[in-house]
Image (tube, rainbow, N blue to C red):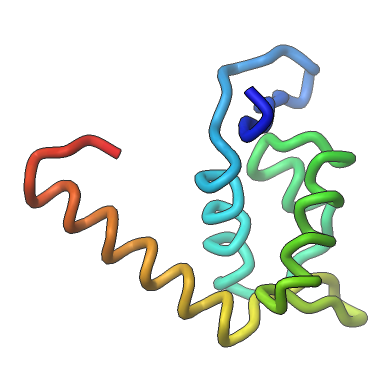
Amino acid sequence: MANEIPIISRYGARRGRRDRIEAVMQILEHLSTGCSRPTRISLELGISYNRLTQVLRSLEELGLVRKDDCGYYVTRNGLMLLDAYRRFRMSLEVYGIKP
């Protein structure tokens, strides 16, 4: 599917797929703990470096992340989106719906 990002392990083997929204939220979650460089994000989240840089550019254009000397970090708008996503997932779980 076009909205899915392949999950690549360090050894190049596919471990499954995650949709674009889940990958974006995982990136925002990772960056919510502090500034990080793309290589570190790629390794820790298992997203290919090339795909990650495309997603980061998109998130930067939307104003959800910013880049500076230490790497990328999440903006206030990114944190607000992440919070809304977390609340939405919790609401689904309350009704027994698995996201």
